Image (tube, rainbow, N blue to C red; front, side, top):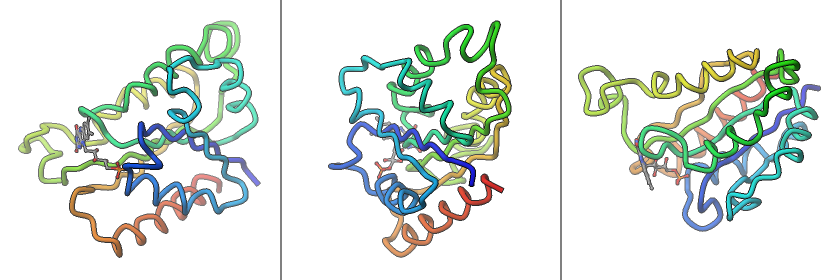
Length: 176
Ligand SMILES: Cc1cc2nc3c(=O)[nH]c(=O)nc-3n(C[C@H](O)[C@H](O)[C@H](O)COP(=O)(O)O)c2cc1C
């Protein structure tokens, strides 16, 4: 079975998260899924690049899961990209992530009415994630359509449970 690594990037997953916490709880029940909580591991932003690279090599499918902050990811994911995707590991002489899958699972407070060319955010969530798609392309990974949870400020408990189950199906589809 293909192995899935979820790099979850939420500054307060245990204490303040509702949406990402629920998604992680459901996904982590799958035997082929490893959850890597980056803010818990690296609260000081001192990322162990070699350790993170080893985790990437051990898995076939990499998911970046995060709440959208200022139309992008929380800051630690940017730092992670900067230090982990090293020259001669991710690109250059070696493309060690070549043919692995990259996907993003993000949650947003706003709805689709805001995330379009006529809305206050002007672009879709998929468009805000363009840099992840381009990064995947640069390191020869296979980028998949993101899993997006909208309207997190008002999502009901029932809808959240349903969304968490859909997330598990989404992950299973990635492994096919
Ligand atoms: C610093 C910060 C910035 C945020 N920026 C955005 C944003 O740009 N767009 C948006 O739709 N929601 C934004 N939000 C709302 C979060 O995306 C939302 O609270 C989160 O997805 C909920 O997930 P959680 O329950 O796991 O924390 C922001 C929240 C915070 C704290």
